[in-house]
Image (tube, rainbow, N blue to C red; front, side, top):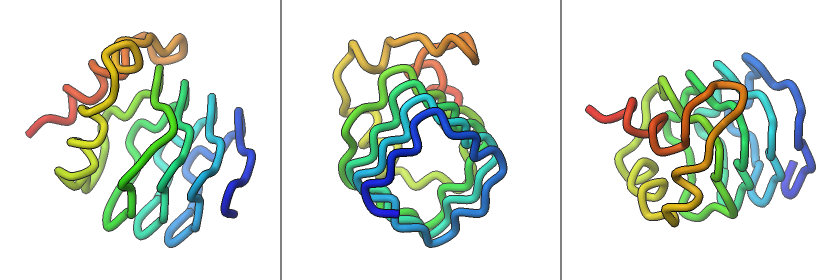
Length: 114
């Protein structure tokens, strides 16, 4: 599914283990509780996506297109390198509000701090 357009798709609870989603457009997608373990996610556009409770075990994520308004709360098995990538994004993206979950991307990441 390299480069797939999945904007707005309902992928709640989806089994995406090992999926090759690099360069995919996941804007406004609902991935709540999905299993992304082992997935390749470089260059994904996460803008406005609901990614709460996702399993991030062994994902490949070194670059991203956008995360403005994405909610990454309650992340499972999140590697520090992924969290660090999120924190390196511009403040305007981190401070964008998600209208569904009613918190900013920054707030959702802060909730994942150990």
